Amino acid sequence: MIRMYRCLRYLVAGLVLLGPFLADAGHAEIRKPSAAGGFYPADSLELSFKIEDYLKRADEDAIDGDIIALFVPHAGLAYSGRIASHAYTLLEDVDVNRFIICGPSHKYAFDGVSVYGPDISWKTPFGLVPSDSRLCEDLLDRSPLFVVDKKAHAEEHSIEVQLPFLQIVSEDPFIVPLSFGRLSGENIDEVAAAIADVSRDNDAILIASTDWQHYRSADSGRVLDSVGMECLRSLDPDRLADALRSGRTEMCGGSAAVAVMKAALKLGANRIKILAHGDSGDVTGSDSAVVGYVAAVMYRARQDSDEPETAADAATESSDSKHDLTPEDKRELLKIARESIESYLINGDTKVYDMKGKLAEPGAAFVTIRQHGKLRGCIGRTTAVDPLYKTVSGCALQAAVADLRFTPLSLKEYAHGITIQIDVLTPPEDVKSMDDIRIGRDGLIVKLNGKEGVLLPQVAVEQNWNPEEFLRRTCIKAGLQPEDYKDKDAVVQKFRAVIFSDDQ
Image (cartoon, rainbow, N blue to C red; front, side):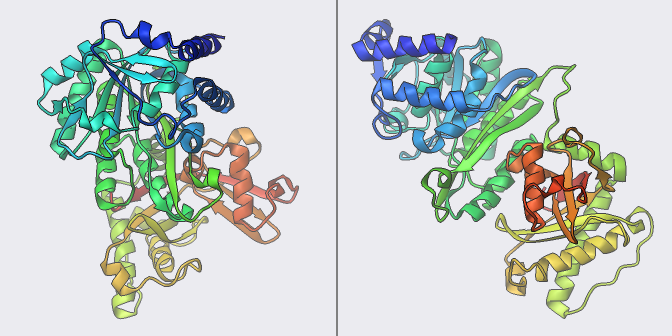
């Protein structure tokens, strides 16, 4: 009812043109919309119906904590609105009406972050959204990196397309619009610290506006986006920055996303949840050249919260407690994997190791190879038969030259650089009911009629699957029918994994 009231109020304001005049009081300048009629409908009635429909269909992802930051896409409403709505629906019952929106400058190059700004209202088909002049001025006073450059906002859509959502889900929103230009790593740290200080003092929610990989094939795009989402789940903005620099993931609003992550952590965020992700191919039906979209929320979980942890937390809980792998053990396993591949590619032989200690104990593992963020091979063993070091060595070599989905890795490709990820698995446990499966913690194995399918824990998180869909997809991976996990002869098991790579 609250949302409907707000929607009707903005509709009336837009239709009879009273809203802009009433909201203009005390504002010296109006920033006129540049994306209306293109990125989203210019007609207030059509716009409200579309947003309401997306919000109504969005999953109700309840979180047990205080929202610190949202990550939302900014493509045309028809393409990314469905994804964005999963984040904005969280704001409907939140008593906060100040939002610091951070987005990239697509068409205008400049240094720093443009604040736009003090004494400016942003117009949409629903009326005006005023900037919070005091907060804008506070940022301008805190660092010379914050500037007022109107050209960075004149034709920019990354902030504008968020406003109709805010007008629907929030009561009388005020914004601090920040367009990000060129920034060094140190400058991003300074910007993030200032944003955190302003937000802390004024109870504002941060919004990072960014699309992800651009115009890749759907398969390639999912790999790039999965790397970025894993950085989010690890709550590690520096890792995200490194992945962006190396091209292992892509975001047009990368600097803004990194800054928002850093600021949110300073504000006490200790959990992140990927709410939805997809790409433009979900709408167009074409997988040849897509753009990726992700919605996520960073929040401060309450002390008594029993919510699922992030993938990084799950990996720590499920792994080191079971395998007790030290950082030195992980480095040694990564070294073994890399040397095994190098030895075969250079000399044509298999390197032999003679190890003792815990790495010589039986262990199950998967080894994944990526090149420039794209999957290049993945082979694993779910049963601990060989010593762990030998399992890793053999799987690394097979992932390089024996994964039938790819041509064998060449020495030239290897020289151009690969990254290696190792998942060390816990012993499988039988799944007795759907309630036994915990997304973000458990991987799955389904066996039936001599066929076996395995999916690692992070896959379900990356694909935003619930336990039932995770089981269906594991069946498909085995070459079975999606519902075959229900067969009385099917063996369904779960496992956990320690996940580490040489790009961390």
